[in-house]
Length: 75
Image (tube, rainbow, N blue to C red; front, top):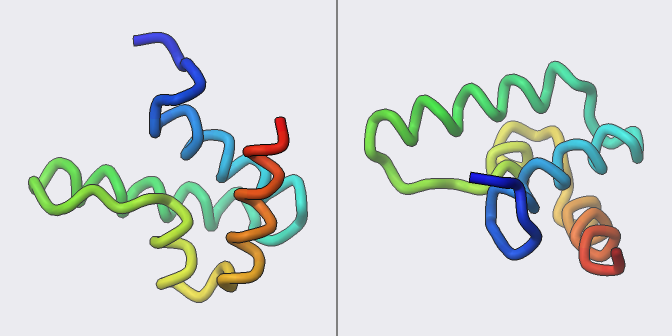
């Protein structure tokens, strides 16, 4: 399915890229979070957003998450 605004996958993809662009995380942090997300999805656990996983892993603060979300929704 195409990557369209309004779909959660679209914002998750943007979220990770913006977090890297802002220097909040490194690409390895995003890859690790995506691996966790996919593993949980395959195991039929509750789908968690990338920001939630990155915060739980100590990679992002709530303030940084808010700043990323503000950037996404200003576009």
